[in-house]
Every structure is written in C-alpha cells, then in structure tokens.
Length: 495
Image (tube, rainbow, N blue to C red; front, side, top):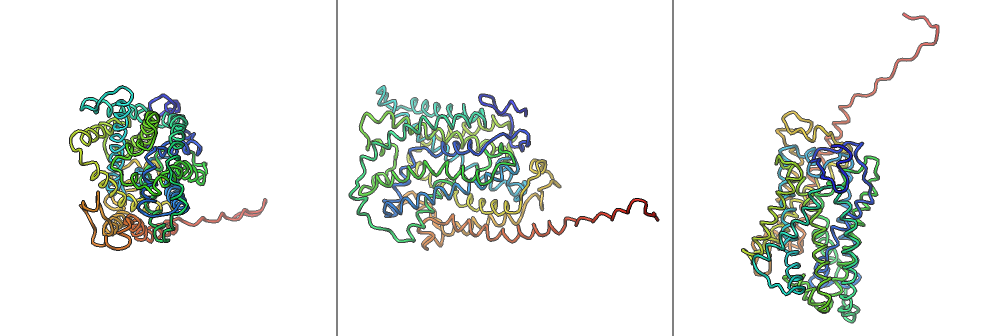
C-alpha cells in the first residue's frame, strides 16, 4: 500500500497485514479523539443510574467508582494498543503469536460476535431514536417501511466512514466529537435541573465491598468490551511512539466523557430509579427533558451511537479477516454491516421481545473476552516484537505455528478461564428470567456479576508460568557472543 492510500477520503486498502515502519505516521493525540468519540454516547447515563439506584452508592463513591472503572478499564485498552505499535497489526492478528493460527480462531470468533452484537444493539437503539425524531419533526408514525429506512440510514452512515478506513475515521471521529459533544453538554445542562439535590446530600455511604463491585460493573460495561480492539487503530503508530502516551490517550479519551456521563446518570437516580430500570433508556431520558429539547437530544443520541459504531465496524472487519474470511477489508466491513442490518430488522420487526435476552447474550461474552485479555497482556510482558511474516503465515511450520497450529498454554489458559468464570456467572434479563446460572453463581462473586474477573485471574495464572518459561528458554537458546581475538601489535610475528 502506498503512503497516499492512507489519507482522508481515500479507501484504506490495507487489510490485517502489518504496517511497515515507514508508513506509520500516527500520534497518541489522534487516539485520544478516537476513544473520546467512541464513548460520548448519551447512553452512558443509564450506567451511572444503575450504580446509584441498584448499588446504593452515594455521590462521592459513585465518582470514585466511575473514575476507576472507566479510566482503569481503558488503561487496559491502551496497554493492548502498545502491542499494536510493536507489531503494526490488529489485536486479533497479533494474538496469533500466543495462540497459534488455529488456536486463535476461538478468541477471534468471540471477539467478532461481540463486535457484531453490540453493533446490532447500537443500530437498533439509533433507529428508535431516529423514528422518534421523525415523529416529532414531521409527524411520521412508525411503520415497518420507515423502520427499515431508519436502519438503512444509520448503517449507510456507518459504512461511509468505516468503509473508507483508518485516516477518514481519525478525522471524522475528531470533528464529529465537537458537534455531538456540544449537543450532549446542552442536554446535560437541562438534565442537571432534574437532580434531587436533597437526596444527593443525604444519601448514605455503601460498604467497601459494594464499591469494589461497582468498579467491576463499570469496567465490564465500558473498557472490557473494547479491549480486543485496542491495537486496531494503534497499528499506524511508529515504534518510537511512547507506550505511556498510548495508555494515557485511551484512558483519558474514554475516561473523561464516561465519568461525566456516569456521574450525571448517578445524580439523576438519587431518589428516582426510573432511569436505572427503564427498558428504553433513550425514551426515559427524553421524558426528563422539556418538549422542545427532544430534537437536539435525539440528534445527540443518534450521533453518539454512530461514532461508537464507526470504530466497532472498522474493528469487526479486521477481526473477520483474521478469522480466515478471504475478503478485502472494504468487503469485510460491508459484510459486517449487512449482518448488522439483518439483526436490527429482526430485533425491531420480528422478535420484538428479544432485545433483553440478546443484550444478555453478548454481555455474557465478557467472560471469554476477559480471559483472552489476561493471556494477551501476560504474553506482552516478554514479547517486545512480532514477526510480520510469521503473523501472516498460517501454514504448518510458520513462525507462530507452535504445536499443530495451537499455542496450547495460551489456549488452555483461555479455556480454563472461561470454564471457571462461567461457574460464577448468571445470565438473566430479570429476576424472573434466568436462562443461565453457574453452580457457584450464589457466591459473592456470582451475586455481584464478577465472573469475568474470575476468568481474568484464572487464565492469567495458568498462562503466566508457561510464558515465563518460554522466555527463559529463548534466552538460553541465544548463543553467547564470542569475544573477538586480541589484535596483535603492529609488526608482531605471525605463526
């Protein structure tokens, strides 16, 4: 790919193959805007509402939980971004180094399912917002045809940015953040007027255990879902780029909007838990605003979802190629949005009561994703470089073939993390609709939704000694440098 092909308005023709060092011109500041845009959606409000209403935190505790959960979880995303600048490839492609080309298919499939699942939720929610906007502005009642049109509008807007690729995504995410960020600020100003400040001032403090659970709730609902996309945008960062700045860009870029939205959502829930338990948070927030604010609010909601979807679809296209689908990046993105389109139509027009269970299913994928994160981060401790040709060589005998195409220590650690994590996991849409519960779901970890934390610890603990042993063997296999023979003085006799 020539340098000119990665510029604004041009179609990015590179797939998952590592970016040569000479074509890496990115900066950490660009990634700040990417992550800021992906997390500016007004739908961060219900997450904060859940903290206060269901976890019974007071204001200061909610602030602490929101900050640690948001900044901390996206610091993990930033760490995975460091692997992107080391290897110049997407996250799931770099994962082949630890898992092997065949072993990596499991984590990659889970990653792709998660991306497509949340894209479907984004598309469905945005279509509902657009339908409400059209009803207010033009009096158009919702019909099946209009529903499909609104879905198509959102999907087309996503494809226009994600299809063009990296350079266009960087520019659009930055400037659209100013527009939709300003709208969010205006909306937030009116929502603050709805806060029950007396209830805020007199809210009792929750125990420390509740704070810990709250941090886990925020982390699972924010950064963990983006972890497997960490290196996808960072692959255009030069190797000389500061790893600390990449981590800071992800943590601050996502953390700032999330903390503000989560805090506001929490404030709205003191004395009123309607937002926390709403089945349609977009409509619930709209009801809190003056009637004339509905239009700017719905535009802000639509735009925030679009910015998040842009990045998700771009990442999903790369993940699909890594999975083994032999398509150009643009076609992979196109296939992804077609599946999203079909899923949104199904959710909105056919299975209207399937929305809750669908979200529960893709939330359940946090367990295998977190287990993968643990293995990948531990592998990064000693893996400072990636072999570009080896990442793309999936044949027997390739650089990362391992044994039978599987890096067994990484794969077994990942599977063990999933298995143990699911023991503590409950998947439910409500207290009366539990369709999966692990045998240890009644324990403290299970009751508080921390099965994904257990998965992280178990997967990391199993893989860690194998990774350390591989590193020591690698050092032992490196021949020691042979000292050069002494240089004889000029004129000395030679034997």
